[in-house]
Image (cartoon, rainbow, N blue to C red):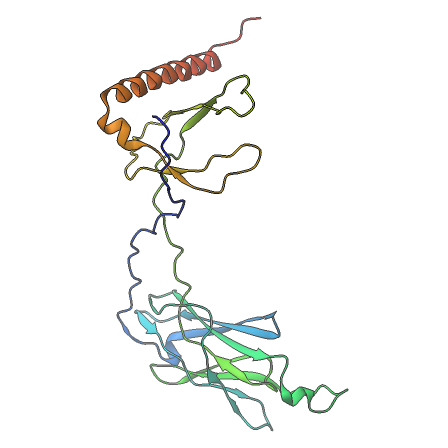
Length: 263
């Protein structure tokens, strides 16, 4: 197809609509789940603690919302967690054996630690008591330094990764036809042969964009001149002839690769 100076866009396609996770069911109680402290990971002056919940009951229940969490240890005053925004999670119904999670956060740096230079005060607790939406509470054990506070997110699961449509030219065979030389100051005219060696149709609608460059990658996306192929008979015949030639070359190459060698 002839070249046309028409701005394009290389913005990726929108993800396909995703089916929402099931959320119907009664709230999970303490007797319905097994809570496990999965450990903590430090990042940017914080420690993120993960607690997982497994449905050990015989029917479906749901964990959602922000629970009341209290750090406890014998002989110490309890410390209640402050609700806070954590990583993105979504509520989901837990069928028997299903899992959910809860993220908590403790901080490394705060005024309480910096008040007396040369010291490093701590407030370490060995357990967390987590209230369940269906009643009761579960306890997990670990090491939780709440000197700079304790924060809790929401019950939930990590949202599934988005699924994107297959690019229209995925699997296409592309070749450049370039002249041996170009006169200084002249225009470089070249042809891009695009062939479909797959068994699936490649539908160029909407018309795709591309970037061209010499030496370095180009920066300005341009739109293929699909209108010319759709509306101009001469261009359609020329394009069809080129496609037939390219397909013939592809078939010839496949035959050569599949033919047994003769020694």
